[in-house]
Image (cartoon, rainbow over all chains, first blue to last red; front, side, top):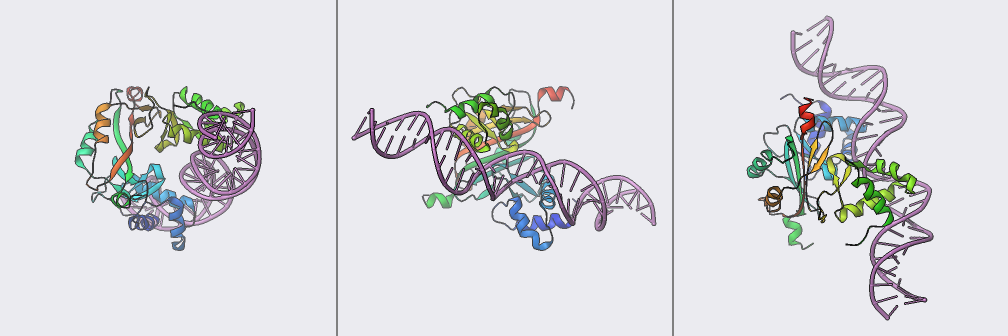
Length: 131
Length: 131
DNA sequence: TTACAAAATGTTATATTATAACAATTTAAC
DNA sequence: GTTAAATTGTTATAATATAACATTTTGTAA
């Protein structure tokens, strides 16, 4: 795999070290000191990073998280758990789940080549805090 | 279940008779002749309709589709197939899938109360057109 | 049948998310 | 070294969504 460009690397590093997903304009704000001044510079890097599977977009949150899989393949089968209280997001890496979904065929005859699954609920911490 | 309010009914009817998901500002444009003039009026009705399960939001498209289940329960377990060529969206109503996902537990200890799944691919028509 | 609370509406302004269009520069492959 | 592809830089603007506040309608219970 090719190396990341300068902007891509800056933005990936920021996302990768963040404990929670980051939004595009929050990324922009955080990288302005590094010379990335315009939204498009951020969105272009994000697009590329998503394309090559280094990050994923959490669609329900319009936010981006680094891929947790060591392999970091192209993002064709993604699943996340999202805490509705603290907004913690975790990538689910479960082979039973991914086998089930990759092999899933509905009666509509569509050929699927990609899926994205988002689970919502309360994480352990928030459950124990009885929030 | 309570009846829909005037704005909610206007907007639901529009979405319900649309063959594809509608975006908020396209809805706004279409209901202006009925006196709904502001984005907020649309978004408030959409929020309510989603809340009571009459419509679903297709997160990856920022668009809204009427619930295909006759029951129209609260939207806690939704799955859709999306054609990446023609953008046709179909709600998947498959009890094996919903059982599997509703019962799914990951090692992270989270308690899920909701999920949303989006499959991407090519629909029958677009496959046969070899697009 | 009034009074009260909850829900819905109307309206203006603004925040947030994302892309168009065009020019210049850098990188990689030959 | 030349060239094509990718990346960057920049301005402007499109598309999606919410804040804040005032008013009206609806449901419900005294």
